[in-house]
Image 1 (cartoon, one colour):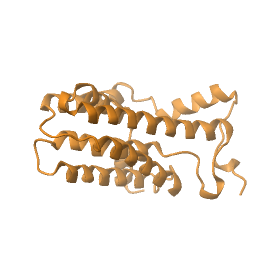
Image 2 (cartoon, one colour):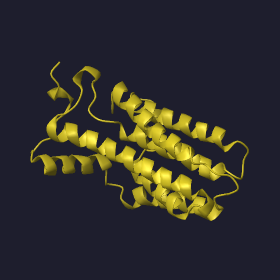
Image 3 (cartoon, rainbow, N blue to C red):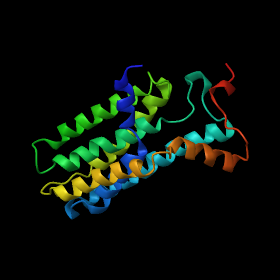
Image 4 (cartoon, rainbow, N blue to C red):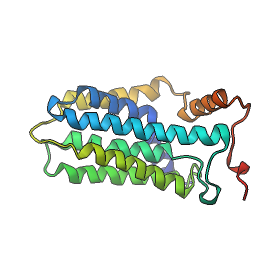
Length: 200
């Protein structure tokens, strides 16, 4: 397996993306308040749907066998919902056409999403649907864009530092393990469902 895919996949780790987003949402410039509120709502909805889809399959076997769908890809969803908006917040007021830079963030998200395929972590339906779900959250956030503001460099730096600190402080914690534990607790099952339970 080419190491590029593993490296790209690490960029979709929610342990780094969610803290980074939280700092930008809480401490961004007040002029961007509408955008940040929409971003928080979009992230909450996209994240909630992703978690619900995973719990539905792992705990109760609810999926779509024909499409090999067991839940939205968390990496695809979160990168598509985070990177474009974060890049927009970083470039607005500093570089021309921040929306074009946001598109580059979306391209990065697409590359991270694709990396899940050669790693055999997800099926195409899970990757594509996750990327579309995250992109919808991004479009919702950026539709409230305003002008005349710039995110302070200390805020940008703090978001990156906090984001990187979380996985460093909790190197053994994996979000998928947490989801599995939650699925077993809620469903009362000893074992979670997997793709082999699909009736082909």
